[in-house]
Every structure is written in structure tokens, then in C-alpha cells.
Length: 290
Image (cartoon, rainbow, N blue to C red; front, side):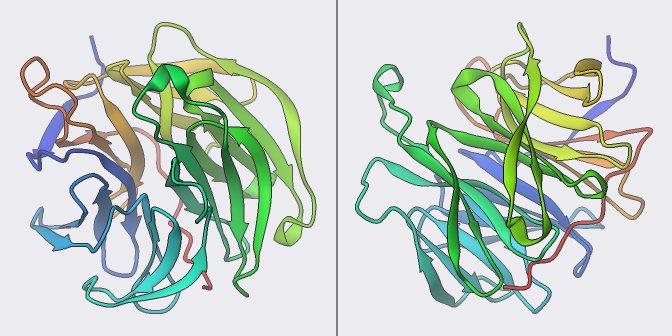
């Protein structure tokens, strides 16, 4: 049994809820329903707001200026607070009709690290043709990694200059060290593969540098000690398909979890938004200089 209580705080029935973060500018949770082409907000009074988007958004992230950076399938845009206007700033893999932009995080130097995803409907035939990139504040685009199938699990431990990343089908959470502005970016030895807890999806890092991983098709989230590479805590969820996690609320000790509506018949909590009150705290959301 869980030591903590898991609550369903919004029956939003997302097709594919993802990319959640707590926005310190507006004191609200923001996330995307990729397949429904919608952006969602939940304020600190638990009032929700929904915005229609022109296309599927793999990620939404906050700016130091007003509005957001948003990752559509093959381009990145700047949008206003109400998601009513979109200015394209970068095209991505426009000649590849099998990939789309997926997971992303603001990095400690004001850029955004994001990955793509091979969405061939036949999972057995999916090849590792996706990539990991960084878009810098000056809008220059750098490829960081290739040979990826499903980019996920990006999270930063800023005080250690460590970035985590997962290619979901491999089950492995990888660990990288970076220098200022990503002039150097190299992989560290790690062995974070965990059996019988689903596959790694979205993730976040808490103030103790523990890594919280949403385990899609595993009906749980896990908290990992990144030094010992062991599971500190496993929290069972009412849905089999959690997709992303983030800390939020006034004290950043509430853990919010988005999910995927894969099978409404057998998993009626899939696609809803869940919350856990934890004994730790998350890090303040970084804002991009873009």
C-alpha cells in the first residue's frame, strides 16, 4: 500500500496528457494534451482552463518574457499567454514524416533541450531515427544525441551539472554531464534500468537530486536515488499510463501527474490529472531566455 494519498484532482480525460510544469509567473500548472491539440492550465484554486491549439504540441515551456515556447510536430514557436498567436522560430526534422517533437525542458542556461519521437503506428517497426537537440537563447540549434526512438525523461540536476534522459523503449535512464552553454556534453556511466515498473516517460528532479519517473504502462511513479541508482519509493497510481510528473503548489511539495487515455474501458482514470502530497520539494521551474 502507498504511504501517501493519490488523488484525482481533475477528470480532464486527456488523450495524451504530457509536458506538465508549475509556472511560477502565473502560479498555475500548465500541460499539453498532445493528441487533442489542447493546452491546459489549473490554477491554485483548482480552476481549469483549456485552449485550442493549431496542431499537436509535444511540449509547452515558460519564458522569462510573457507567454510560452511551444513544440509543434516539426517546428518550435513563441506563443502568448492565451495561446492565440504563434511565431515560428525553428524548424525541426521537416523532411522526416515519421518523427515529431516530444519531451523538453528549459536548461540552466536559458535554452531548451528537446527530443523527437518516431511515431510509426507499428511499434515493432519503429527505428531509432529520432534525435535530441538544444535550442539556445540566440535560436541556434545543436544536435546533442541521435539513434533515439522515443525521447523522454529529460530533467536537470542544476547544482550538479547533470542532465537525465530516457529513450522509452530501451527502459534505460541515461545520465549526462554538461558545461556552460553545453559547450561540452558527454555521457556518464549509469545503469538505471528498473524491471516490472513499466517504462520511463516524463520526469523531474527534486531538491535532493532524486529523480522522479512516470512509469507508463507500469501504473506507478518511482523516486530514484541517482547516486546509488536504486528505487527509494514506488507510488502506485489509479491509472496504468502515467506520462509526466512535476512538483507544484505554493511550497512545491505537491507532485502532479498527467496521464494517457489508452483504454477507457479497463482504465477509467487514464487521461486524468493526479496529485500526491510529498515529503520533499521540487525545484523552481526554470524560465527560458528565448
